[in-house]
Amino acid sequence: MSVASKYNRIASIYELIDLPLELLFFRTWRKEALSGLNGKVLEVGVGTGRNLKYYPAGCSVTGIDRSTGMLEKALKKTKEMNNINLYLMDAEHLEFPDNSFDYVVTTFVLCTIPDPVKALKEMRRVLKSSGELIALEHVHSSYPFIARIEDLINPILFFLLGDHTTRHTVENIKEAGFTIKEAKKLAFKDVFRKIRAKP
Image 1 (cartoon, rainbow, N blue to C red):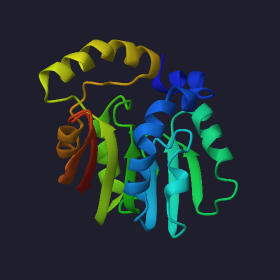
Image 2: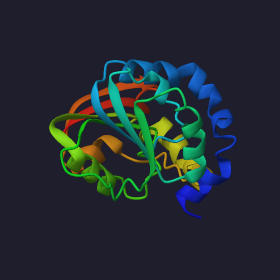
Image 3: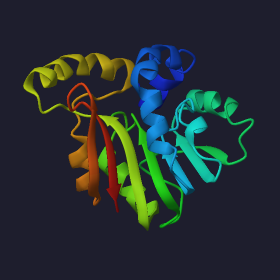
């Protein structure tokens, strides 16, 4: 089953599944990461649209996702927002010209894209040279005990959500040609990170 199919299947209950982490951590991190943005923003993996309310009114936001079910949920949140446009699109094949965006945003997405480096190269392509990638992601821990737990739960989360808990996302971003400006540890030692990178 494809990742898009998995998310179509759970779209109606996704926000409930995610609620404990959303209330404890994610909403605070989203607000902090997105509140200072301006210009043209591409959000890759917009999902049910949880980030949308945190973008300043001055941003022109383009959101993409592979899941029609998740996009339908996000569209309902855009009714009062004139600065948001959403599209069904594959992150590995972005349908935008080079140098189109001031920011590219991913939040808990690089763990699910089948080829994250390919997608990140596309994100770098569509970013302006002065632009920035902002990513909130979970990564494989450098702490052996935590990494072992991630290894154990990885098959379960991949089966349910297409989610990889063992990805080395900071290294993947570098491999795609970005320069890391920040890789801030947020929670569970070094599992959750805020990453800022320049093309």
